[in-house]
Length: 137
Image (cartoon, rainbow, N blue to C red; front, side):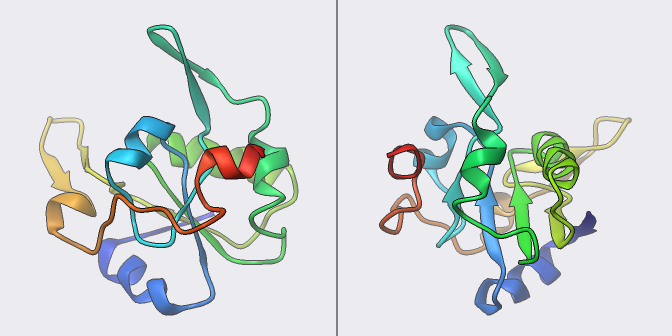
């Protein structure tokens, strides 16, 4: 897994890279990177999040182990964990958006703005077959 910054991620939008949003269905619905697939790493169970037991099997329907994929979440933590799970499953061409969708805080609480806060392309519309409901079929 290799971390990428916002300019590099933006340049990859038109490349042959699968963008995978590992946030919850609700977060994805509120806004996401255009063309991104929604494969939640965690699912809401009541008032908490639990690991999605189908994550790796659903990923296999989105991207092959030899293809490049860029993962992102709210602040970068879930997507880092998701990328590690994918690496254990044999994926090697993984990129990770280090500041995430909203931004990442450093140990001193300073926010580095993410994709959304920088006004980069975003949408609330999902392309056919790319939302979680379509992927779980």
